Every structure is written in structure tokens, then in C-alpha cells.
Image (cartoon, rainbow, N blue to C red; front, side, top):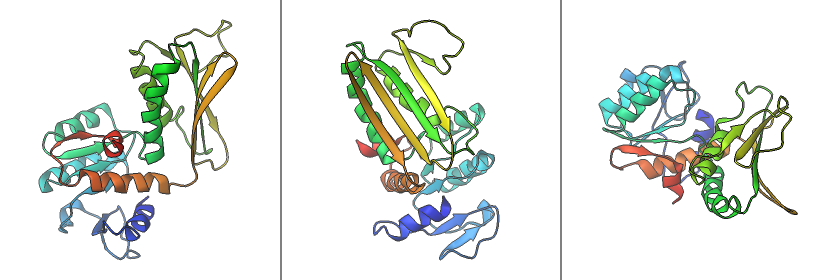
Length: 239
């Protein structure tokens, strides 16, 4: 993702990459890459992080010390780390989102309106997500985020159903089915299905490369630079 973001920034007239942070030396970039936060003395306006949760604590220390806004794209944070992120947001602006894609976050906005209309009319709601065969978690964080957006509009009264094989019962009304497919090199597909009587409405998103996440992260960085301390997400960027 570092290379992806570098390529996007290089073509973006409103932004410039001034430094990188990595666990190994890297001399293939047009900017200096540091292996130690403490040695990074380059002036910057915002940090984009697509690394590992193992480095999140050091990253937060670095951003707090430098008063740098942070676009936090790293997943798999522990409850303790999430709490620390929230605490850090009292001193610096932090933008964290389950999915950085502008398309996915636009779909979330559409789902809020669709749910208000279709759920009370009796439409069943299902989510199907597809990813490459190397993805170890299921369902995807994005699928759960889509379900959460829908459920928030329904006063969180709906239950999530991940497996129907053990139950020999009709589908309950207040249920959101979430299914996962793993295969090949699928970057990320998400389908939200509203199934009613004699009609089906689908809202789909297809990611063909990781660039969609990098593009969203760069947009988020431009948005959060100069903002007041607090927690932000991609819905703030697209509103």
C-alpha cells in the first residue's frame, strides 16, 4: 500500500509525499524512508498508516509528540489499542474507517436511505462478500460495517446470521444474512440485497485493485489536515 499511495500522491497536484516509515531500509523511493520513528525529522501535515497493529502504539506516540493528524487504515487493533486511539483523538485529529474506499462509503450513505424505505416494507436484507483465497477472516470488516450501517437505521433490532446450515426454520423477519466467499485473487466484492415480493434491489461494489483504498486514504489525508482534534471517519470526507 505504501507504493500504491506513493503513485497516487505523485499524480495528485494537491499533495506531496515527504517521508516514509518502514521496518526495512528502502532506497527505491524519491523521498527518505525511515526505519525508526525517532529519526524521522521531516515536516509533514498528516500521516497515513496502512501497516500493522504491532506498530500502532509507536505511531500514536510519534503523532502525539509531533501533533500530527493521522489517517489510521491499519486493522486488527486490540480493544486496548482502540481505546488508546480514542484517547489520542482528544489531542490530535484521527480519521479511522473500516474501509477507505470512496465507493464503499458512498454506498453506506445510500444504504441509510434505502433501509428507511425498504425494511419497513418487508424487504429481506442479505449481504454477500467475496475476497481472495488468502484472506483469513470472515466475514470481512467491510461486510460487518455495511450491516452495522443498515442496523443503525433499524434501532439495532436485527440479528446477524452467518450460517443457515444448522437451522431448519423459516427466515426471521428481523435478520441480516451475511455470507462470505473465498477464492482466487478477488480484491473485494460486496453485494447488499433487498429482496421483496416480486422484486429484488441490489447495491454492489467491486474493487479491482488496492488503489481504491489508497485513493480514499489520500482524500482523507487532505480532508483531515488542519482539522481540530477528534475522531473522524470517511462519512465526514464524502458529506
